[in-house]
Length: 617
Ligand code: F6R
Image (cartoon, rainbow, N blue to C red):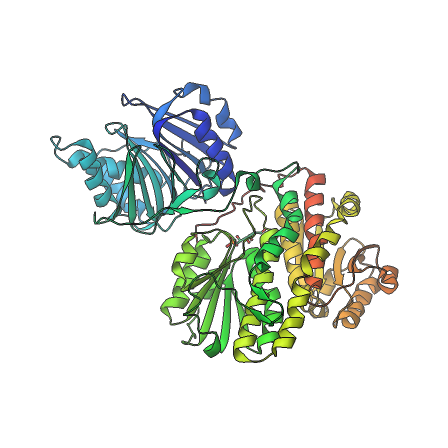
């Protein structure tokens, strides 16, 4: 969580930092701050509580131009979201901001207080600022300031436990930007006579597409004339810049009212991009791995563990149905936050798959590291290039959904499921559980998905009307069977996180084992019942709800008169195969959550208490 931005070069104005933070606001939005250092060594810091917009009125107090500067948008971990707790934090000549958590901040704080340092915030970050200052001040005054900063940074990071990406300025080195990484993302961008630093490439692509991802235990010393990269012991590190494909237009709302609505509408494109270049339609073959493919022992894999959080977890649950069917291999889907607290049962034939849009989710990162250290082969199914999870895995398969800015994940979900289905086919072809012509038939279904999803997007107006009816519900139940159970879980998560309406999802067959006690005339149940192999059984469950007076909002196959007769309201998706069907029913649920949130007036793109990239455990 938290977004950081930095600049060094001939000159940047306050808007540069503010606009960069706007691009990163999805990472945290409870307070923000900017520090600018001019070439004469004058530092100015402005901070504001609440949304980034509150900082805007303070920009005029910052210098018109600075050679170096840093900015931060916060998601609170230690200390309430107040101005005092907003970053950057200052200690003497040093100004520092931070993304991550310093776990051992308490003993360090006590030691620093004993030395006479006064704390003005409740954050763990201020400890790092004072500690760096203490190390810097302890060095001989005769040393050049830059050399002192280098040494002080190495000494400081050696004492810190936890995860951190720091952006640092020192008033005595007004031509240097310091960027430090351990466990939290940090990207460096290269411009003409200037360098940038940020927690995500979304903040950089309007300035440059030439980027370099810092790895753990690295420090970048950035000057307009060039960059030096070292490890935490000071040993030089060599890495080249690479070109990213993301563009500015991908990160604009493009005429949509919210990023979320834009991203829901981008699903056909996201799915198509995931499929692109990976399917050999004629030969009935797939190849999904971007790097590490050669080492990926698909033939000998005898078990899959999909590890993820939130929506990515649900994409794993959905894909499980298909991977097991295609590859006849057991698939476990684990919540990353629980995975590593169990005894590891992985073997060298286990493929552990981390599914993550951001590639930075700390729970998933730690879980996949645990799987790898336990002997599993690890694969990251990821969206953001150069992420921490990619570095932690043996192999990577990008979903290519493009930047997802809305905090609630939508297009990444569909692209993840598509990618995992292809993984199932890749396993099937290596394990020879499907013949090439059978794989070819599934491929023909996969390529139809974008067009079906496009058709379902046409339901938006009808669903907006339904939202007017359902927006004041206190609680909504979702049910589905087979793959539709996973879709129900995703629909319920989206509704609760966006509209703050309590929502739960159950496998339709589970209803009678407890939740049916909730049903009365006041409860609405969203029932997913497309005409598939589970249809008859799900219909029986819907009858049970009807018999107890529950209100039924059914999502089924267009023209299904039987379902319409049972339902209070009906959303019809085009008739499709079982492979396409979950993608078709996901769209109305994403739209329902979206339109209910709009009707309720909640903050759709930045729901309360959430952040896009959850880098704490
Ligand atoms: C829900 C949502 C979250 C994320 C979860 C994992 O709409 O966005 O539940 O899916 O935090 O994030 P990633 O996929 O980045 O690991």
